[in-house]
Each structure stands twice: as C-alpha cells, then as structure tokens.
Image (cartoon, rainbow, N blue to C red; front, side, top):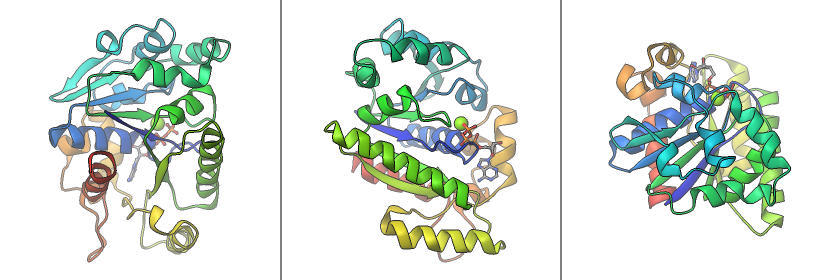
Length: 253
Ligand SMILES: Nc1ncnc2c1ncn2[C@@H]1O[C@H](COP(=O)(O)OP(=O)(O)OP(=O)(O)O)[C@@H](O)[C@H]1O
Ligand SMILES: [Mg+2]
C-alpha cells in the first residue's frame, strides 16, 4: 500500500479536483484505491455525488477500523468522507499522545493498493500527520505568486517531517494553466527554474472541471476528453491523463 498526500495551504488551487480525478483514474486502472477527505469542507463526497459524513472523525478520534469507516463510491474506489466534525477531530488529536503519528497508525494495514489524502488549505496537526504517513506528496498550485508561495510552505513542513526521520518525494502540479495569460507563462517558467523536474506538466483551466462537481461526477464520467483531462498544449504532455501515468510511476512503478 502506498500513500499519496495532495496538499497546498493555499485555498482553491485544485487539490480536491486533483484528488478525485486521480483517485478515480487509479481505480479505473485497476488499483484498489481509498480517497480520504481531511478537510472539514467535505468536498470529496460532494464532488462524487455522495453525502458529507464524519468518516474522518470516526477514523482518527474513535479509531474505528478503516474497513468499517470507508464507503463504496465507484468500482475499486472507496472514500472516507469528511464534514465539519473534522474540525473537532483536529482539536481532539492535537492534545492526544503522538498526534503526528495518527494517520500512520489508522492507515496501517489498510487493505488498498493506493490511499490518497486530500488536505484542507491549512497547516495543522492533520497536515503534519498526513505527511508523516505519506510516500509521496503532490502539490497543486495555481500559477500566481501567492499560490507558488504555498508550495514553499508545504516544502517547509516536509522539512519538519524529515527532521523527524521521514523523507518524502514530491511533485508540483501547476493547475488552471491558461496559455493566453502572460502571468501564467512567466510563473510556470519561474517554477520550473526553481524546482526543475519536480514540476509536472500543467493542468489546463477548463470549465468542465468547474462544472463536474455540481453533477456529482468525476471528470472521467463527466467529460473524459475535456482540456483538463487531456491538455491542449499541442506537443506537450499535459492534463490529468498524463498526470495519472506519472502518479502510477512514482507510486506503483
Ligand atoms: N482545471 C480547472 N479549470 C477550471 N476550474 C477548476 C479546475 N480545477 C478545479 N477547478 C474548480 O476550481 C474550484 C477550486 O478547485 P478545488 O476545490 O479542487 O480546489 P482546492 O484546492 O481543493 O480548494 P480548497 O483549498 O478550498 O480545498 C472548484 O470550483 C473546482 O471545480
Ligand atoms: Mg479541497
């Protein structure tokens, strides 16, 4: 079992969209996948047309086994939904013994090939705990200065986790890519100059990606040939379909 965390403390950069799209993509590729929502907004369930629920709370506070908390979503894809009780879970585990170990402990022996953790836009105890459990971190970022600063914050917390003896590989996923906007191109170049091959090809800005959650469908169901899925930058590999290949390489390769 390998664990992928999707994190950026900056809000609205495409974390949940990436988490849902990649989790469903892995499931369609035959990987038994669990998607865990660590955000009190509960958007994972919403985006998949399911109800928000205190799944994360039951997992980390009640320490119910993952097998009884996980809910079937699609073939090969289960989710641990979140809701506002996740906020309460944070307050509870912060005063517990070994809060940084909680995700490692509750996911130990989870009967899945891949577990994806969709983080809230915050740097809190769940964030550190998720990093401690992770094999790889994917950092989606919009191509503007403040979102790129969020990347540095995630890298800093990965540094903290490394000091505790757990080193993690990472990739940066530029999102909302719009090749007609100069700022986007400038920021993408700067990102590549700083982080080199850690930067993966971008996910295009795409109204289909914005619409899909309202229908409770993943992009594979709503519009598998949309720009966000296949990219539109001729000659360059981009979009979630190519991101999925890279995720499979780093996690299952
Ligand atoms: N490539 C895209 N093109 C256009 N809209 C997108 C794209 N990806 C995501 N969106 C939309 O942008 C909004 C924010 O995306 P998303 O919820 O995935 O971000 P997030 O980082 O998880 O946000 P939060 O920090 O609040 O958890 C959503 O309405 C989503 O549907
Ligand atoms: Mg989100």
